[in-house]
Image (cartoon, rainbow, N blue to C red):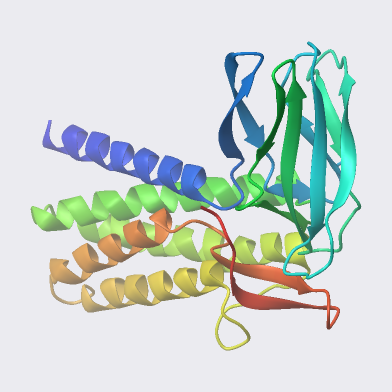
Length: 278
């Protein structure tokens, strides 16, 4: 019964951390509420786009006495906004209003806001706090899916090991070792491969850059190596507890908080840029 409780608690904590990271990250679609002909609608505005996809934005609205316009420009530029009209398309899977934007290089970004006109007039949304969308390379499923699964299981085992260490359950050392193995495979092997497909760089953390995703992975790895080494000859559960807490904190930090960004002035991709994700 004790083991079942530990597994259940570890699973719930891991699910919560994964969902929190996903929903608070700067690549998660931005949700806004708009009023269309006296009816409130919720829109999801893209904040990431694969180069393998058609470069367009979609408004999930029905074709009912409205028009919509997109205003966009390169991120961190002093240039004027360009405009594009949203055109309604009765797509069977995803009907709505679509507006095309110019394709950007890997890690290139556009900032944009929208304008909607209905029977009550014209309203502008997010002009003072535009949405930032980043373009990335397409990551093959055979790389991305194992990476996600290994990282999730590593987080699950990490949390389980930490909980077991708290109550000094003997199996904590076994799950600590599995955590380290899975974390190396998912974070330090497949992680850089995902990074390469997405932004054409294997590693953009220390000492080559300040990409937070890479650096937080490195920090968590150091703590888990320490936890496993310190428990080899003697039981020192405090190291496992600390490593589990560090990985939990790392897991809740959104991806791309400090991420790769194409510098339009130099023509190079840089790291360590705080992007506007609020």
